[in-house]
Amino acid sequence: MFEPITPGDRGPAVEDVQQRLLVLGFELGPTGVDGVFLGATHAAVRRFQAERRLAEDGVIGDETWSALVDATFTLGDRLLYLRYPHFHGADVQRLQGALNVLGFACGATDGIFGAFTERAVREFQANVGLPADGIAGTDTVRMLERFRHVWQGKDPSSPSALVAAPVRAAEALRHTSIALVWSDAPGRAVAERLENLVHATEVGATVTVSAGPEVPSGDIALTLAGEVVVGSGGVPVVSVHADAPLHGRFLAAFGAERGRRVAVVVVPSRVAETEHEAQACAVRILDGVCAALSGEAGSVVP
Image (cartoon, rainbow, N blue to C red; front, top):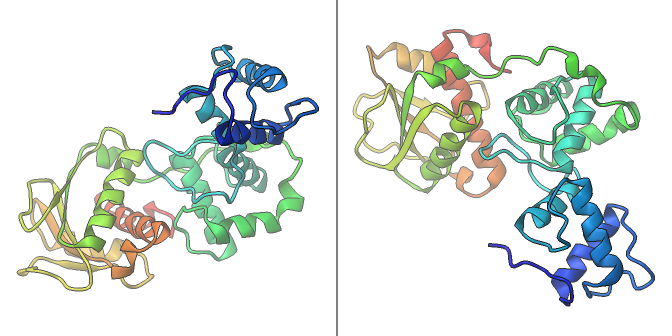
């Protein structure tokens, strides 16, 4: 719970608020960033609240602080990817605007990193020769900046009427229960992100995560582990170590099963080390599963 900042307060928290207000172009008077929440700072907060249609009480509570943070994110400040709840903020809006102008349709530039924005990021990545993982990290932002002369200053909403490309097999996910079991740290890191990614793609999907060794019931049951496969016992094994798309491997693994589809998924041990690695691994697995559900290899971005 955010501790409210009220008129008369002093200190580093007030300085942080003042810095953000200056970035957004609000006038703080001759004293500027002085760590004192009075006068011009209080008036600037009320103007900010009015612009964002928040309660104009001049107090920095949860909603006002969240809005300030969102408004002052710049593209590249953080890793952006599909998750639930969705990332939102000025950095996402700038990303969407650049992609729209470049012809990779996100739809409305609403500042929310949803499924269509992820699809547009992946199409851009594939177009410029980057791994199409839908994660707007350092390399993707750097490549977007190389095209700044094309998109900067252009109307980001004009291409929003373009038909946004279809995303993953959301309809199939809605009618398929997925059980994820992990047996070590890398497996857990990917399983938890995979669960979140499924819900970000289709909120109504049924997905559970639990520790092994038992495999719970589900239309699809995946056991995720690190370098060593524990007790596969004849269950099809899908390795995520190679960079190639996984749709063929999941199609083969699930094709060997009748009815319930079960597989052991071997993930690289490094996925437990970084946010990007774990998310990219979860993206590849979900793409493979969705391709297998839809029965066609072309259902996702390569």
